[in-house]
Length: 336
Image (tube, rainbow, N blue to C red; front, side, top):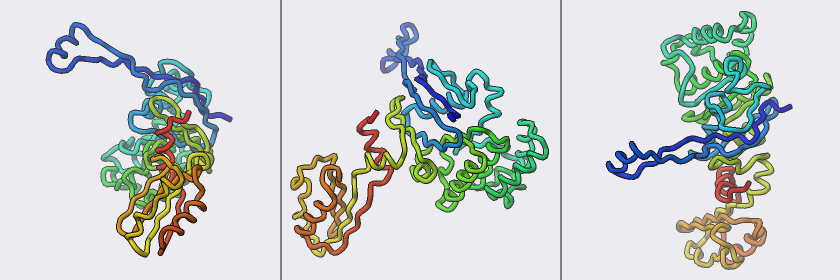
């Protein structure tokens, strides 16, 4: 069942254009020129109940504008948007009871209050019954390990503690949909892992539908099965991460260590197999050689056979393309 339904969603802004310099500024006061900027340009996708969807895009792609429409902050120019049967910008008062929002760089907690008191305030705002509040706090405390700092003022919390506290605050009223914007930004590896595990457990326990926006592609790979990629206001990819890797992850990486550094000049994979700059790159530092090659154009077996014939290899390591490189190639090609 679809929890989120989006069809041909658009958001346009009017932008004032002025000529450069003082003369241009004065001229714009009397003869204002404007142009229409399409921040979101007709995106369509559904999100199933209980799904964790990665929603990603470069800066200026329209991602933030789309999220603001999904959370009810902005009204679309056109198109339809429905979340759990409600239209966010029309039913804001009721709609906010159904969603939770976490922004990595901003907190919804009261800075000088002990964390436990912030939760008590939110209990009254969301009108949560005492028994439900008690059960909910027990669950969130176990999942997010809040106990060591729950009586501390929010301003004294570390970034990792505050992020856990913000996730707890957003989930206190058992929302149907959770929007997570950069939930692991600035955190160390151990804390990131704890946050990811907590998100998985909350999703599994409550069947919460989660929209995750992040520049940390490890979050996407570890939490999501499906991603929607947006660029210049349009969707450039919508699909399964594993399918994306199969289709676009044909770039493989080889790291060679040569017995003799002077053998580097013998390696001429590009000309040997007639590859373009998009299909092959090579970097060499002394006896270390890094090669990236498109295995849809030439098989790894053929490449390795050629290399072992040409140079004396001391060590070799072969890796699949990482998700960051795959996504970069998708943006470059503008798939959809």
